[in-house]
Image 1 (spheres, rainbow, N blue to C red):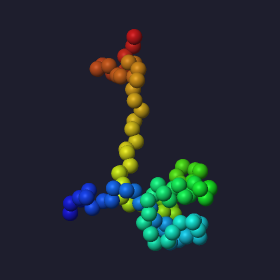
Image 2 (cartoon, helix red, strand yellow; image 1 turned 90 degrees about the vertical axis):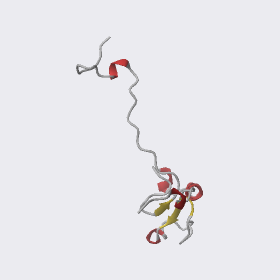
Image 3 (cartoon, helix red, strand yellow; image 1 turned 90 degrees about the horizontal axis):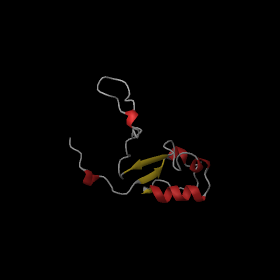
Image 4 (cartoon, rainbow, N blue to C red; image 1 turned 180 degrees about the vertical axis):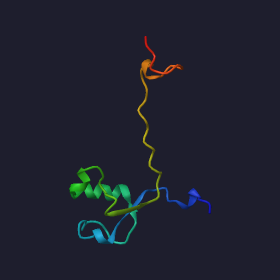
Length: 93
């Protein structure tokens, strides 16, 4: 089976999970809508979770489309001494 990016919507969409309907009365039921518009609505309604890490938590919303999340980058080495020398250990000035 091959995966074709043309089958994936470019816009990130979100849909309220049925079991979370009572916690998010402002969110439409059974509709895929722009995730950013729904996040804005969560912030307008001052949802407690919207002020936390994510405006639309995975437990309450399904997501589809959009760009895949960027991988977490490792911390950049910015000092000369951060690079190990060929014999092991850190370089010294």
